[in-house]
Image 1 (tube, rainbow, N blue to C red):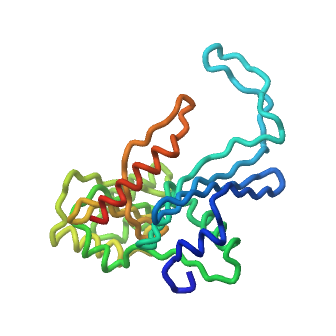
Image 2: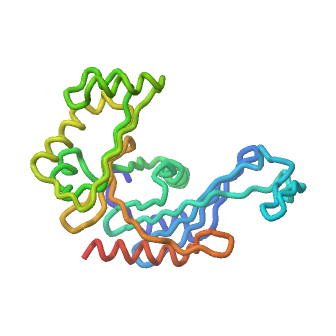
Image 3: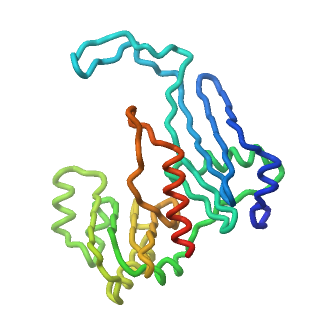
Length: 251
């Protein structure tokens, strides 16, 4: 924030623990904040009352019934975030929702410049990645006719199905990244403008997750989260698991 480290006391002053809601037309955005040690735990979500299907289907009887949800009620999709004030890291369960969270912070810190920067640069990502989990490349078929690594036969095959985009997915199991794969990763980055999408997932020497996709460079934490009888995440347990993982990473 304003090129300075985050200050938990400033956050507690500007946005105390509470639930904040913003309603626009028939859409609602809500944010529930809790401070814990040097963390800010944030459960947030959005939802729209419309469109609303007037009927629902009973999966046991296959019977169509009137939708009990009223036209002014919303079922929100939840996202979870944690700000670690010690490191300045933002951890979020769905990176696509990162901007929604940043916009909420900007609304509460008017006049402040708030930036979310990538964890890695391209160079540091290449240096740090030691094992590959997967590489996924998306491209238009005409790329393959110009590539030294993919044959024209593949291009013909894709065009034969009249596909507009081809996706190649390479899965790895504890594959050590040696010089050859390092050069392949560098080549992908050097030719990134030729691809419509790139995902590179791997781990560093501490076996900690790393991810690159069109949104940027990230760390990643993976675990199985607990859910209740409605298959909703148990927020307190989820936050406990994430914080445990974060603190293990920092040791």
